[in-house]
Image 1 (cartoon, rainbow, N blue to C red):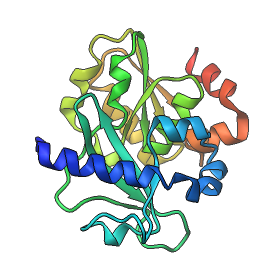
Image 2 (tube, rainbow, N blue to C red):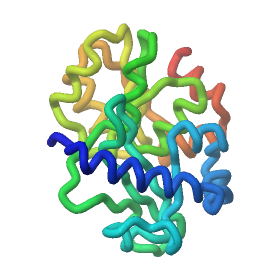
Image 3 (spheres, rainbow, N blue to C red):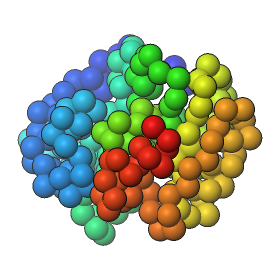
Image 4 (tube, one colour):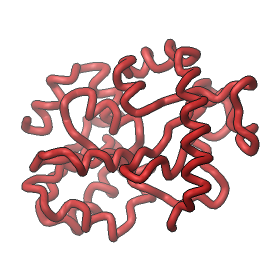
Length: 207
């Protein structure tokens, strides 16, 4: 679905306001292993009572994760930062699914990774593995495969669970150069890097 210029401008303004308050979630981001530089690169933010945009009131108290593209911001997802705070992720009503971190396609590389989820994507990039993300195992669209035709190797970083492995197999069936790299049981990229470090992820990917 095409995002109108008016919506892009609205999302851009909201993302800027939320990013200005990102220090309010510094402790949460540190706990996830996200550096200040990564938070800045991905323009992460925080929705508070004082900066909330009209129509975003239900996202107060959540982390704002904008979807950056060369043409501007096309979406923002909102993540809970406390256990028991409703659904883990909330999206705008009627929003379409998008690949996360499509700016990675502008990099001069021949190996790219696909992750499940925004945090895994951020953590992979922070670890030196250029990656894009799918917002959940069920959100892969078959036509996404066209974006990966020119890469020598596409590393699918799968969560160490049934849903993650199933997603990886589905992607591998559509991308000839795909290689599955499954995290240990119970781990995703984020938790794996927190436990074993960035170098361990690079070695697992073969970089």
